[in-house]
Length: 129
Image (cartoon, rainbow, N blue to C red; front, side, top):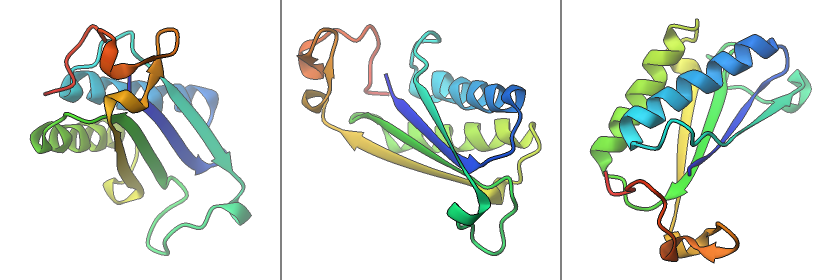
């Protein structure tokens, strides 16, 4: 049940945004073993005056923030980073324009499935991958 927030410049078509979401989600399903149906994304678009990009990056610069429960190994995270970058390259992104940040939280810090702590709920998949 990772939560994904995408921050980018305004100007991507709706089709392109859906493609970006699908490519990131595909990498998460493969590397983190989340269920295919588990897709929770938010897209935040900024005007150029409100989104400061490092000077050596293009207007396709994207920040991908993934908040998830603790438990994934460094190998799973490496696979995630690699998968996201490889998938987005197919969509025209320069790998240097992709910033990925993971925020990890303890299971008990998630109120889910009727307000229960995540540590007391069967998620239907294993976060220890």
